[in-house]
Amino acid sequence: MTTTTAEAVAQSAPETNGSVKIRAGRLLNVLVNAALFASTDSTLPVLCCVQLTVSGKYLVGGATDRYALAYVKAELEEDGTGEAFRAVVPTAALKSLTPVLKAAARIDDTVTLAVEGATLLYQTAESTGTVSLHDAEAFPKIGSLVDSAAANIAGPVELSTVPLISVDPGLLARVGKVKDHRGKGDPTRSYGKVPVGILAQGDPRKAVYWALEDWARGLIMPVRRDDYSPEAVIGAWNA
Image 1 (cartoon, helix red, strand yellow):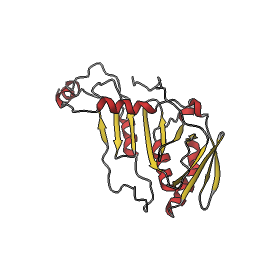
Image 2: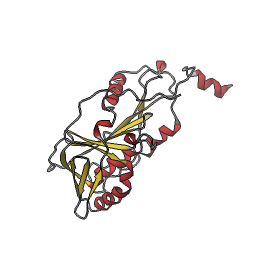
Image 3: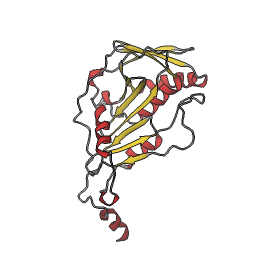
Image 4: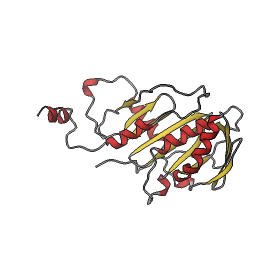
């Protein structure tokens, strides 16, 4: 049985109104990669979304299906307003929004995002449109979970004491699908294959932390086992 993030960790939420400017490729990178970790279960519509927030000079996209979660960030344009806002964007809206962002990214265009009530307005040099948002207050407060995991991992690790961690290969495959969608002219873009850092928290019942450079990170919930010793896997091979 796989553990979940059902018990959300409380955190303060930014104001729901505001506007920002960001390069189209960076916004595309945030939305597409975060959406890999959103739910596809229509009975849980609030989890079939990507939450966009502003943290300092960054736009941050977060998503979870309860078994894995991810946060992807991208730097805002210097001339953006920088106002904090929260927008919970249904992943279904990405079908129409993604082509707009790809076209804008090809010419290294910027996008203006503005939240007005339950609507996200977007504008590029060639397109203007709106997206109906999900209730921001209904989205789980999961932001501090990743920070807590990182804090648990920090410090020297004695390899001989690291326990066996079991994870769903399907969840691990999502991390492998995360890639850089930022425009070729974006100085923050990554090139070539970027290795994924994967760290355990020292307890096989706690989430596994993963990260790509400085712009994407998240958690994968472990699968519960009866035997957590490395021999449980090594012994099976050698049997």
